[in-house]
Length: 524
Image (cartoon, rainbow, N blue to C red):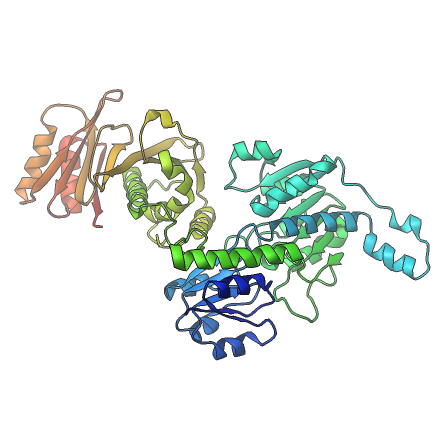
């Protein structure tokens, strides 16, 4: 009988549902977490709300297989440490979304109409009507950072106020944004033009502290900032420095630690609540129900679609990530050491389109040796942004019938004047490169050592390349020789039994007057 430990005040429905399926459930929201974990060290499942699940907590549960966050955000769980110990971490996306979206609207109205201080004043017997002159939401501009479950519901809840909605979310498609009535734009424009800014982004290495002084100084005088996401995404000191000057109204519901005691934002928050976003009977019930359902589905059906710390999503063959790495690294090699890309454009055909973000880590690793391909999509996006490389995922035309294929193009220069690109797919379970730059029908299986030589097309070049290699007893395993008829260039790709020395590559370059000559090695 599997033991499930629920060390939080979660709706009892979860415990009942799991018990009915034969699980041994311990539900205790009163005992300190560490004490409860020590007393239940044989637990295989941990269902939590906002409790911090640290490496120390995980180490106390040697049989732990699954952690379920009954809610969306999972920054309170050390997911990387859990992964190292083969522990899956799930969340229940959407369970709390409506509750948080409604809380944002409540804050906007309460702060705009001074409801809290007006109530206090009136209860004292005062009648300070002129003091509490408010403003309306109707016709104003609201900017939303993060258009996931909560952000999209907030758009719907605000529809009755006839507001202009600006949004930022790099993962949201333009088509869905149009359907929601959201104008996708930049973070800078949101802060510069919005009367209300609502934050709905996760806290991670990429977003921590991103809402800072530069953005605060862009805000319109008297604009309102609402944070019901995570405390760490906002730089409190920066807000403190400009709040009075810009007359920013700040509403807050998130803190570094969910506990009683003084709060660091007390002096700058116009409204501060004790993390009430998901604190509704409806949200608690839905989160409990989904946590129990997902636990049962995980163990009884092997369903893992809500696991947030797995390296590979359900339905994606890991070979496609290897293909993305090879295409990126080969294209980077074609560019040459002196041409660092500042823009990446990708196209994913067929079913690969829905896995686009999972290709970002191997692409980043393919162009930068210092980035490890086993890191997550958010880490890869942050790395590219910090490196000054723009990533664009293009819309594709599936009428070309490429199947499950991908193209990766790298651009160099301020005006993107130089480009190199490659396309590939998986054929008979092998990686296959079908195009490099404008050399189509390459059909190269990339494993091993390959010498690439680009030159002005003329007879006898392949023979000269082979002769120079033969002089050094380098065996040729395979040769590919596509042409680019428009430019008059040819490309010879020679697979060799050993790596070709740099001095020999230079000799070949001079002998055939090559515009490109480089070695590419991929040893899977």
